[in-house]
Image (cartoon, rainbow, N blue to C red; front, side):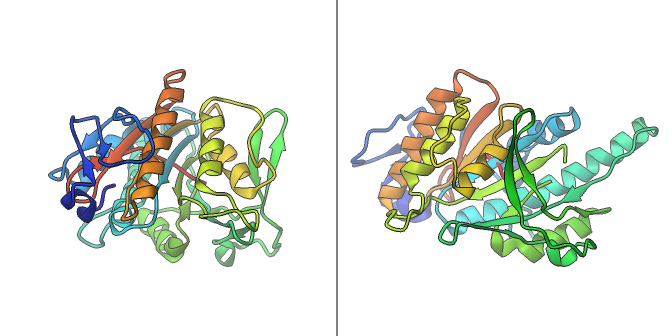
Length: 300
């Protein structure tokens, strides 16, 4: 997602439908890092229709799926993920309504099968290295156990003790989403996970993960490596849950005002693009705010 200011000042150009270029970039980057670059005339609905169907249908085919939204906080990213209610729905709202729509279709075509939709929401604070169960106030379970990530030898990385709230309608699911929207996370069990992932800290004086460190984790997961960088960190563990080899994963990359952040995003997207050529389970897209659009995604 490229801001209008970046495009207006010539900081970012789009030489081809699947290319983006940062002029005067200090760091080298590939123009061909993205599956698609969408122009300013592409609507929010069109973007969602390109990003979500494969992931949502994958859930109903018995596969866990993940969407990772990578980029600094910006108005464009907020609109893409959360929409501008009531006029426009974002990725989160569209994913929820799509899951319920397909569930209703399956209930008609396969009446002997039981379907249940549950929702969870976890916030990770890097500065405190702490996981917070955002839906615990709505849970009927009186126990308040600590949310943690466990590494099962057979099943892989799993999130444990998070509240899973049953939702019987899109309106109820959207209510919970709106309740925790400021914390920027939603998850689900064949799971469709959507992750709003920032760029990390500017420095690691207190042990926080920086952009290069987060990039190394993502790259290792895309490559299917067993041993991850910063594997004791909660974020590394959560991303491992979200991007295990059995999951279908996509990325949405967004851009903001700072040129060095934009260079880092494109550089990381280039590395992920090269790595993903070895597996078709991962996709990378781009959306720009006013002038062009990029896309890719997920989270738990």
